[in-house]
Length: 148
Image (cartoon, rainbow, N blue to C red; front, side, top):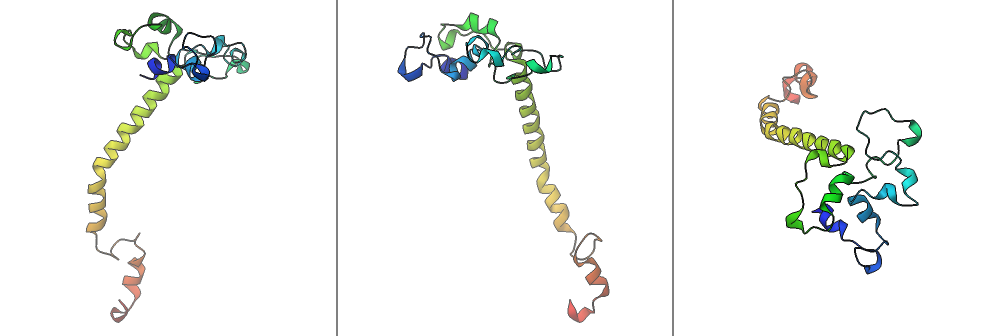
């Protein structure tokens, strides 16, 4: 959906086919590297994560674009219902890696949320002052009963 909508954006209400593109359109279609002013920052835009690239060319990996250029060429001008299937290999590898990380972290968080009630119950089940980590532990052992 992001690709489909942003691919049709034109600057200042211009036609989507005009050369006066927004950055959102350039990014969604992975055309940032071909822009005369932005291209210098994307010399190696879709290098695989972990691939050794000279430090001078390690810029704008995520900003280089959303999809692989070959996927954009197949999808260009098609209606949304006719867009080719978008697989993980069709995404900018750095975008795909970031989305995978986001999904993994979200699943881990949801698993933790499912365990949270039992953690709270375990903490609340212990009477105050019985655990050495409890602030009232030492107080309960040394204070006279009349003070508690």
